[in-house]
Image 1 (cartoon, rainbow, N blue to C red):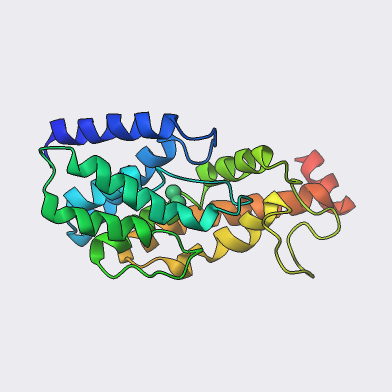
Image 2: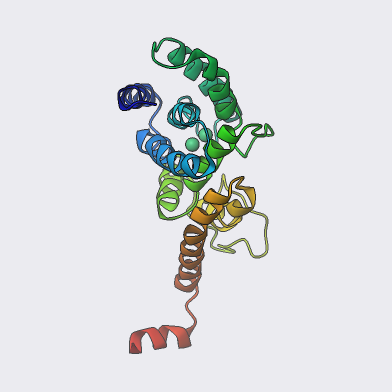
Length: 225
Ligand SMILES: [Fe+2]
Ligand SMILES: [Fe+2]
């Protein structure tokens, strides 16, 4: 894809996402990060960049908060909107639009549709990488603020003795979802990119555990350092 067409798609995605209800976890920065990761994975995996670029930019062009009953409809509605937009762009190959729509429909691991093409796997992995690591923690807690969720369970913050409730406690997404993302990644390239992020999330979670229940001895050791 040439730079002019890529720039045109980015500006259209920016305009489309600006029309959506405010959601700090699904704004243009999220789309651009998914695009960066999709670029990197596609390069290694030799995927079709026309398809991965368009799908990454438009994958959340329709989105609803996780607490909204329409949430599961978002990938299908995003695919329809992406198709409409791409059919209006003279420089985008019409024959590749169904592949873009498939990648968008199957990007979410919360739904049952599985990616059937390399390009769809690249876009799903790129989106999953945005769900693990430092930026993902920022997105998680920002989105939790919009939904008015509690930050964590005071009884059992890391889900040691209870099932996760990600729509009740923001930290449950980090402790139970982020730490298992590696198992859901499809490509080797994404698995390599996820490894460092996973270590960061684990160290964040152990710091949370420490701050919520600092054993006296450990606290003293830290003060002495
Ligand atoms: Fe999504
Ligand atoms: Fe996304």
